[in-house]
Image: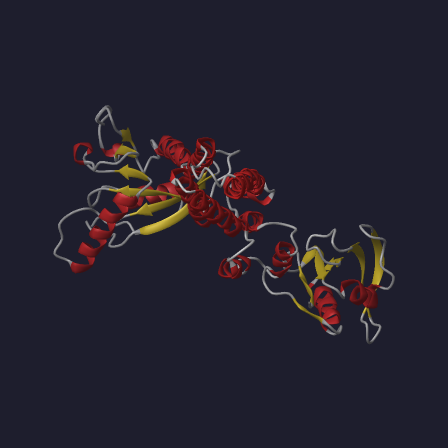
Length: 424
């Protein structure tokens, strides 16, 4: 296997940069540059010199890790050098000149950690999400995955499933005179299937990653675009006095109280002979149907049915006191009245759709394989032939193997690790 290297810290300039080397020649190649390496898991200050010219490149801290007790499961050396571009480029050039070394591909360090059993696929997915996290909610959910929260739960399920499989196989081998399935085995299969399905009912990770979609809708000139601009704090949507200015929807991602939102401005709802506007109106209607939270700026009595709707009395600055209907929130994009309360209501609705801070959420891939396992266990519970029970339990075990990355996930691995930066 090749020995790989990459800058693992942010792009220079910086106070300190970290360059990581991993693979069978990591120690040998690092010694060519830094001389004698420190003891394992120890640090030392070394002069870094080009292995061919002997030119002094930098004075840096050198760390050494031995296989298999390292992040990748391989021999690793890290150089903590000064973070100037010229320094980093010089050390990278020195490593490039060393025989058997090559620059790492995106995510290759993490992929090697996965392949060497240092983490399973769910932990790798959590690490990818952690790197991309932009809100506190995303960070906490990703950290729970990256630290092995789901991995530990899966291990418990697998242990129970293995016990059920062993019981079914024992019955096949030794209970030849009685081919009936033990009701206790059927009950245990059903109980595990029920537990898996309860996890599938949890809020998914997709809303946490992509943001809870909050759609601002209503008739033309209701003040939708002005409200979006007031919430965002900048002119993201065009506002004019002409009805039908917004022809298509505008998406603005933002975070409110650590909750990720995707705020969507839509075309005004009305019949229109203008082809472009009619398309925008149709898209607005579709977005209303798919909205997680609907903010309605039209007549309260004409609001569409929606389970999480916030009715507004827009342009309240133009109306007299007490003009707003009882079931609406007065809001003004000009004076700012009601905007803070609106954000609070949106945040409260959004939190109901997101996993709790201490809860583990499933992404689409993870949910798919857990559902496969649950279906197989349900079939095992309903089967009246021991051989069929054993086969359905085997299918459940295979689903867990795909969930953890032990089998049949090459395409998933390529997509996942390409999300990582070069030095991760």
